[in-house]
Length: 374
Ligand SMILES: *Cc1c(COP(=O)(O)O)cnc(C)c1O
Image (tube, rainbow, N blue to C red; front, side, top):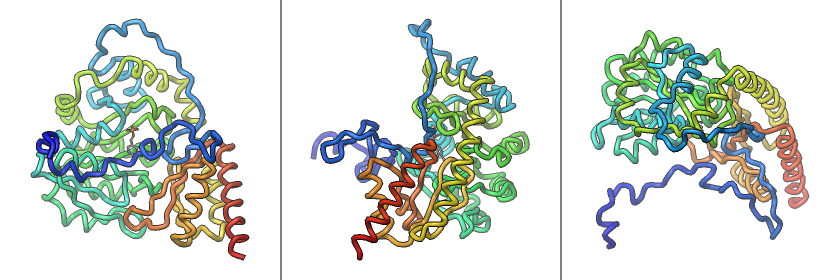
């Protein structure tokens, strides 16, 4: 046994890290049969198209502010919250980790998740040594409020995701309020709103004032098209924000990140977000209708986000479609291993060109398969 093996926390040895889209496939173009092809990335719910920001490097010799003032003002204006209720983080993912580290004692306390759901809640819990309690979503992909009630007192942080990833649907505001009531004396209730710009009417931001144990997660990675920037926001009452501020690193937001993020929240930046949301919604509806008409597609899940989840008729066809697209350099996400999502694939809404490429490839794939089988 090496010294490292002897020293490491044993539970980390067997742990499988988060299989992010970028770990599964690095963003270099791949080579198919010796030919270099540009991949089409529809596997991480990113926006399509390149960003266009210039940054100044004046002052880069200095450490940045703990929470850069220009950025805080910009998000405060956008969200309507006071800056004391906002923490800027290295993506929403860092917010998830901070919440667990701040509220869960390692090897004693638990988080609660509602699968099928976003994978990072469980990964962050594992790396911190927090236990994971699961209360699956019901058949309508909504909260099982009775199941949640049975866990009151057993958990410290509850993660709800609305719109859900990979499911795409929003949770009803009533069920979120019911959860807040259940855990009013015993747990922090986190509502992950990573996709909320695609359905702003479903936000629970207005409940923050009323519920001191409510926390909302936001990100610039999806509707703001800035996944590479790594910038997110945790919204909560100032008492929670002050505690998280003790746990976060001293300079969490790099100066160039603050600069670009602030620009993305300017009037012009927000107008672009608005346009992107409209375009995405339209493309999603078109793709959704088309998928619904395909014989190999058993079910298209209703989505309020920038992706579509669909169930394929059986395992063989699902695998064939996934592999065929991959071989064509079109990357989507297989969600089959998620609870109750066997044979489900998730497709991010890319540009119109990308979506017409994936449709063409799917048509070609199915027709090649039926020729083979004849
Ligand atoms: C993408 C995503 C995140 C992470 O966002 P980052 O800001 O890129 O870390 C968090 N939650 C959900 C549900 C997501 O889909």
